[in-house]
Image 1: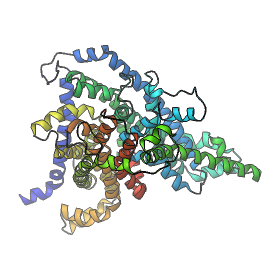
Image 2: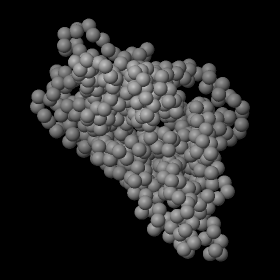
Image 3: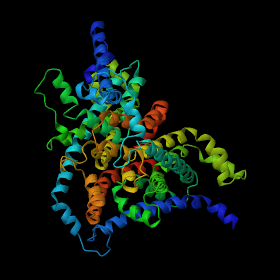
Image 4: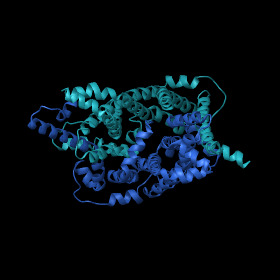
Length: 290
Length: 297
């Protein structure tokens, strides 16, 4: 018996965690998938009714807004954070004397909760007392900056706060990438008299393709899961102008008592995440096992 | 932006070089201001009186520094009907984060040790399945977890939240330790086994003493994740057991009485302070966790 235990101890140790993941990740996904096919309202029902919930979802103007917002927010957030992150990394890669200090400043927002970030930006963007009133105080009486309460523009305030929070992290990724480029090649290029901007565009940046991919995956993942920031900054409003899939799901699950809708929207979110992450993880794992 | 990196090239006037160098530092400084601005605004606003906030400008320094708002935020601000400030919720977060961090780190270390050093058939598949679990949007487990916590009698309790954080932290902690232990030669384990050391003995006397850096990375990562969590906190807590992020959001959105922006800002800083401190003290490990967390192990 004790010999059996000694031989199987590694499996015995791993088993509880693995079983927990099987139940609480995969089992729960299954549960949600099942319920998304039922007519569950306040309480879950287990009688399968087909794709009614998905039909309702795609007919819902609110979900439509959430998906549109995800496109706008996701695209702007990813592009701006990557461009800004790359620019900062290149600027910081010029043998800056106080690099460590500056890096610390650029990256600290990443340590903050999105709720803290949202609270701060809500205050800064507050039309009555924030940037708008400050600029007016400087004498520009007609200056208007009311994006936070303007249904057409509120989604961009979420982009602003999200970029502020995450661009330093993208910078750190790119900086590590810049440092890992083979110095010999760069030196050789410099000896050949190739201008620095050409060295960047022709040698350094192309060799960082994997980092671009990682940064994209991380940012896309952050964008799809965005929830806290919206809640803290706009609460999904005005109206539901800044709803994202995550806030839609939460509203259906916990305030509307529409579990079927909540489950269907959660499944769509998961499919989107998996469409992005699974191929990436698969290639990563395969590369590692080789 | 690439033009600015010119100083690296040869054949340029020293004057031009110096000018570019200055431009570079000015740009870096401006970006530093951009990142610091919200923090600056938060701190100054929290030190002003409401009167001064209404009449003054967003970026002005406080004329009369007052800690009133901090006092209110800590022990008097209202989260809905209760007006006890952030204090009880701050301690809730501590009570949730500390056990959850310890448990998930410990389990992650053991799991990582098994996956990296005691390979058995299927170990890789198990690891992959656990890893994929890191990336699911948690919305997809929210509903069944709410039901399960109810069935277990843990709905709205702090042990319930600890449980949730441990479960969904396992993937990452296992990944961290696995990637670290994989770099330790398997011969070490083999030699120790030949010498008669068992599974736990090897872990305890060989692996654990080597693990300090990765323990620090994991603890910081888990602490930041759990402290900053909002989704689980808002879904699985009830009045009295909410973590600090949920309480902060309630204070800010509380509609009773006058809107006290200085209190909001003080509360936001209090809620952000623990993770900010960890970042300032151990930034190197924080960044290592972030980059490892983005799978590039």
